Length: 358
Image (cartoon, rainbow, N blue to C red; front, side, top):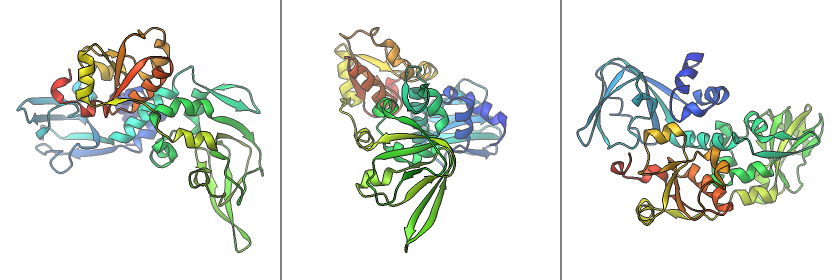
């Protein structure tokens, strides 16, 4: 999956269609494309669990446990959405022609969608030292801070989604110069860093001799180990060129890793609240909302939440939901801070019986 056509295929899928070209190219590296000949069952040995699977070529017949049969064509509206999501369990599937399926990890995709919706909000700002003020959107999208790699393997993989807005508010950007020492071995850790631009070198004293351990490039992070463990810096980081660092204070870093106090409801509890007058608040993208939603839910995408403060009725109690509970936690936190009464549907639509989804 390397050419521009593949990016266009990705751009037609939901919720992936919300990504810009750079994000789509990045996601390609995490997608698995499989080909199956006519007559095969793609889910017999490789089930859907934990994956979003899309039909990108050919025709596929799916039989559900409720005996319903659905014919999916790659050029149909059905194919724009993951197969089997919010449907009864798949009993069998048959390729009616030679088909291609695209598979991507559910958790990673959901994290990318959540961060993307937050980062694209035009009101989000980041403070900048030693240079002019600049919007966080531009800095953040080009910094690599929430790249798929960092969302999978860096501390941001464990950052509660409700704290993303706080993170954007507390990040500082500083200009740094060639040969400048950023982190000194043996000193107390004070910041978490991401290298936005430039190059740096990591070294450690071994037997009294400085040994180079790694070369850092734009998008790489460092400094988190001493903050998490509470120990002294175990290496020195020196700039090898001029550049820009994004940094987060130790106290802010540790606080942001803690789950904020939000009230979560099981589907049964949430359904009772709605029966008593609460309102479902779907914070996904409009195409996702149109494809499947809870009865009488209103749609306010996460990226638009700040715009509805003062518009939504503060006397109404809301139950926010998304696919997994990640985006709804972020939206609920913003609304609660603005004085609204909002609970979160635990595990999102993943926890809702299929029959309850429109």
